[in-house]
Length: 494
Ligand SMILES: Nc1nc2c(ncn2[C@@H]2O[C@H](COP(=O)(O)OP(=O)(O)O)[C@@H](O)[C@H]2O)c(=O)[nH]1
Ligand SMILES: [Mg+2]
Image (tube, rainbow, N blue to C red; front, side, top):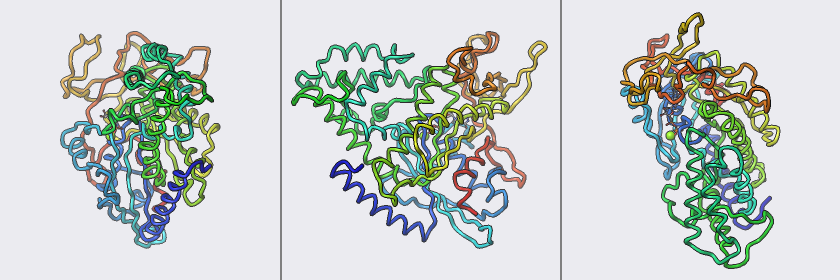
């Protein structure tokens, strides 16, 4: 539904752009691939490994064009958008391969263009331009705000903060909220305090012990150059979902700023970035959620619903068939699967599939193919069976990064960054349903199994050395990265 003049203008801008891009796409077939996920989900590592594999020839048996020997060359090229930082591929590769360190984390959008020269199945030489866009998942999760009033968002945010582990984390903010008079006169001091308490609550939720994922507005956690601006100085109020504020009230002020947030942050992101994507991979640190326990798993499922809603928001807001739907493939990927024994990779995928299917049933994503995968863009571990008494445990072996704390059982010493350790990573349940069963024995997290097993949940393994591929070129080991690549661009290289 076109609801306002500004939406009309936006539509016109989008239409103009997509006509231009359509024309360019005819000359140079292009795929704009969005890589998103919450902070630390694994975006930088994923892009670095993917581009390295394309440019240097990784071991990608499931990626057909490469496996069939039809890719002549893949090279980096200057990106099309002048105002977007370039993805710093060279530094990230150096960190990963030369230093065997994980790349520095970044908290903003970046872009990289790869040109793939390939032979089509009919024998003709062709080029596919792959524009990779790395953007924070926190921005994506803001999109549903576009179709939500301040009052509706307030009610929803308050309801969510009332249950589970969130209730405790929200206590201070809610106590402050209870002192506010929404209909009373606007007060900058109250707005600043409320925004601060609210931000503290969101930050606490994001703590990896809880691994809560569903936390709009995203810029509250990564404000960038908007820190301190009115568009980021608001918070939910306890007001009627269908009410409207008296003039000059705190409520009116909060509502205006909420709308400003949408204008300054959410709409430009939608128009300049999201609406232009052809394909999308959403990286999720699902293991982080499994480690944190059932509440985080429930939260993760809510996140999938929100994510699918995001793809739906576009359709509802912008009707033109030329513009929407544009993203025709969406892949949800659980990252860091090398933290599990391979016996659990399929189980992880099954649980993910189950979550996403439940979400798809509610959101209408017709027009886009949706799939799920469990992968490790960089495989930092190998597998081993370790005897413990009469039993053998399926373990993973890797080098913990130096400094990361060894578990208390080993005397709390520090890892030296050189020595391998074998870890029993815990097992996911065979039956995905059992993760969601409300009664019976609910899933308690990966390492809740038994006491003699050590809590290695937060061990960070160092990146691995390169391994030689069949043709001798050294490549980064991975898990199912080639399958992701096949789903995302394989059909464009036939
Ligand atoms: N073992 C392993 N760890 C990973 C992998 N991908 C990411 N990580 C870990 O997750 C951290 C965050 O990854 P990064 O790509 O920077 O996340 P981003 O914030 O989404 O860009 C890294 O520093 C690594 O410790 C992977 O494939 N395997
Ligand atoms: Mg990053």
